[in-house]
Image (cartoon, rainbow, N blue to C red; front, side, top):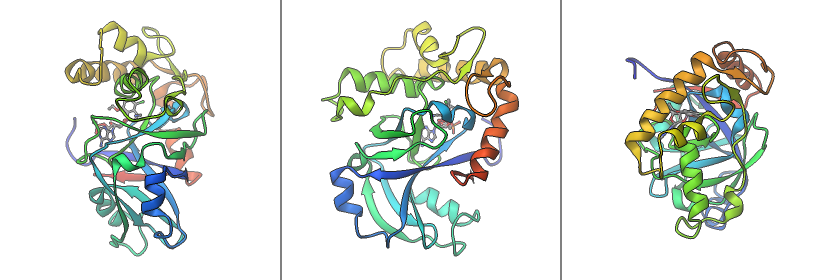
Length: 253
Ligand code: A2H
């Protein structure tokens, strides 16, 4: 990883139907604001392939006032950063409306902007770090080995992970084609490296590196407004398009 601030795209995933535990904790406490789970991504061009959203079961999240109309669900650390990046009105304001543990969010239905599957569910991922991004990760199993392997783990053992199989039912969607790995790079690389579970963190780090380089340098868009363009060309354009539509914002840390 480089030096200096990382420039993420903050993707706004509007909460459409809370899980019962989240509903009990949040309803009536947000002053009528729309609540968005905000996911931090480095790969905005893959957002067409979102199939679910990940949080960490044991991570502490908050619902923070962004202005009079909107509130963001993320870690307090991220809300603090956003407050000084022009995202929050008034600037510098960190107003936590609700505190909630990740496990309570599982099963919440959210909007996935730009995705071919416009509504997805919140699921648990072991590897979500509280110290990075917003603590919310949008899942693109076609192009992220971590996302793909976690989705497979959840499908294998839904009772163990305390999820309904229906929440993990959306299959990976082809978004980018590359010469070496076809139109579903992450599943192909996970298979090639014989990765068995999300606990294979060393091999997953290698898979992530391969998938990122292959997609960035050799990938072509299969869907969306920039279909047929290279990933290098499309990456910034998809991001701009999301910012313009108000479904994403710039987030740095
Ligand atoms: B990426 P960095 Cl398709 N904990 O978005 C763990 N992972 C996190 C996180 C956290 N708190 N916050 C963000 N991330 C993930 C898409 C994607 C991502 C694809 C392929 C690779 C990829 C869809 N998930 O990341 O360098 C987010 O997942 C691999 C680099 O570790 C974010 O971008 O800070 C990425 O990690 C940030 O990576």
